[in-house]
Length: 275
Figure 1 (cartoon, one colour):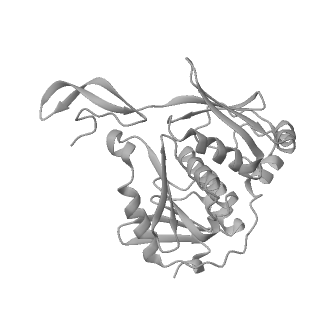
Figure 2 (cartoon, helix red, strand yellow):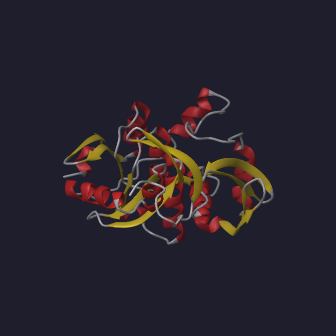
């Protein structure tokens, strides 16, 4: 079945009129298209960032974003969380601890509409270096079998409901040490999908040091940073990493695997963690 066929539009997708060219003929049709909406993250009444995201699992997104940006140190620092839909988009209102709010005010910078580089707008190279490499080596000695990486990635392909319907979103999944996929989150943005996954794990109090993450994208610097900050020992990507991502993974003690597809993968950092 092609994307858009059938009658059911899953959450996060809209059915829109389109014209399909196929086998030399043009025909009117209805296609399922992934929704992408502005989501404002508001802390103690102050709007900090506006992200473009899929309108799914937004509580998880808010918690994961807050942890990944080091706005809060623990999910428990978010006392209240409310998702409010409006005419212009969605606002996630959070009440956070006083210490967290103080850090937010000290380090606040514009992040409106970020879709790629997580450091656009930093005021200096020194600030970049601090933000880039503040995920310390955690000393995790957990070892993984290579088959576990491929088992989890193969399972992830079957758990991407929104992507199967629209062909337009990324997924991030969490697997136990034996490769059993336990949790999946999807979003139009690869960073958002990983934020949602981190938030879901934090809300369920999952020990992130006892498994690994798989993602349906390249492994950028920011993806590695988010995984390391979440305490994950391994990040497996279906595509390639960047050189800076490899550097950050090496310094953070994170095992970074790329091109995890078919019967192959490439280990770019801390390869001894995979047997």
